Length: 170
Image (cartoon, rainbow, N blue to C red):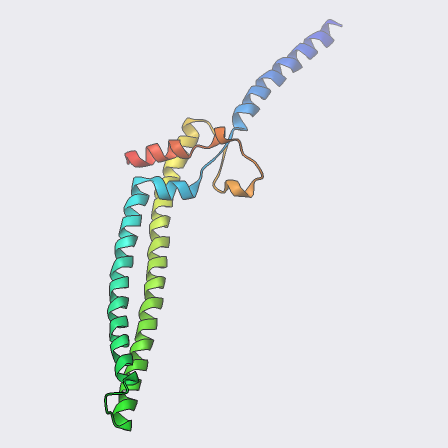
């Protein structure tokens, strides 16, 4: 009986120690990447840079649109006497300018999207190191980057603010 009691006591001690280790290792947190990009100082700077690029591209598109409108007025004008060859020449210039406008708009969208992806990637790369540091410091075993993939996560395990604070220090 004494042997069984010691064995039981030993098992209880092992279970208690293992239970504490498991509960610390099972700590799960999550980070909201969109907030990280939108609210970090790096993200704010990236947004300003993208906005500046967007404005430059909008100015170029607006200038081309003015040219298109001027050419369209010439083509559509009834009071201006143009020969068939001149009208055809103006129409071709209008069509060419319109295609250039479409290309400018498409290129602008593509450039802005590419720039946005690159800047977000840079922010997330830098944030990844900060995220690992915060996770180790707070003893998280798992950090989810897409909390939407899970049905529910307690807001208490959101470490976005902690990562933002550390990221903004760098």
